[in-house]
Image 1 (cartoon, rainbow, N blue to C red):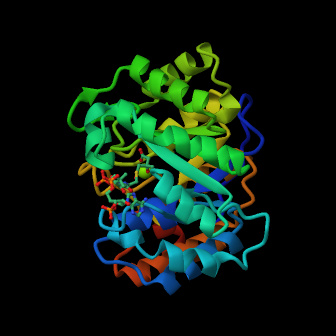
Image 2 (cartoon, rainbow, N blue to C red):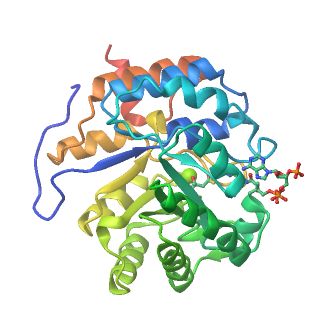
Length: 311
Ligand code: HMG
Ligand code: MG
């Protein structure tokens, strides 16, 4: 079978926007740095497979993430993509934002943490110092009419601190919204959440007045829970789901982070539920098989493996 049987369910969204993070979250975690031309081809192939939001790279300190140090060379290679393809980039501070604006980026993401330990490991700042670093970034981006996503990492568990209190996540989400972030992405950076955690957090955020339409979910698949957690989020009305082609991903500053939810696994489930994504699963799988060849190891995505073994 190359397509799932379609059996829609009541109470689920008609359409989901996939925020593809393979070229950023995936490639930032590769031991070997992928050549810039290969990254550019990867993004083009993802667009041809029907993905319309493709996180392209990060304008972070090149010493912190050497894998993405070619952002200035890569981004212009994507300028021929159709206007309907959004290419968000990560920016940690005003220096990163200025680099991105100089190249014409019109969607950026700041990345906060719900835990102190990860703020320190990932941004060399306390949680409040990190929020203080983002404030002028968001203000300036909004002046330039740039769309801003606010990531919140470690929303459920943290490798150093254990369970992260929901109140702490809500505090960071509220701070990012007050700054002017247009959307938030709730990160399970180390993949420890189970569906009940997701339902509780979304319930509390909506009770605190955060519109569900502004919330995306970002699940890493360390314990194989990413798809179950996504289903719980869909049940709660979430319509933006982050995923990474072929299941690439991780975070170099959180040792227990493994790959993201694989986009193919997500699309298989969504198609089975009759939910629109605009993604051509065959083309996407072919892209991940090609990328696995470039990286020299098979894709961890179950769907990629199942579909490619049939050919
Ligand atoms: P720092 O060492 O504290 O930097 O790093 P600083 O502010 O003290 O500045 C030191 C020097 O770096 C200065 O240069 C700055 O100009 C320069 P000098 O004046 O000494 O010559 N500098 C920069 N250069 C280029 N681009 C920049 C930049 N910023 C400063 N943007 C910093 C602080 C935030 C820069 C650093 O910690 C950093 O780059 N961290 C990025 C870490 C990262 O990218 N992690 C992965 C992404 S997050 C993630 O994967 C999670 C997510 O997927 C969601 C989830 O799964 O939960 C999003
Ligand atoms: Mg991530």
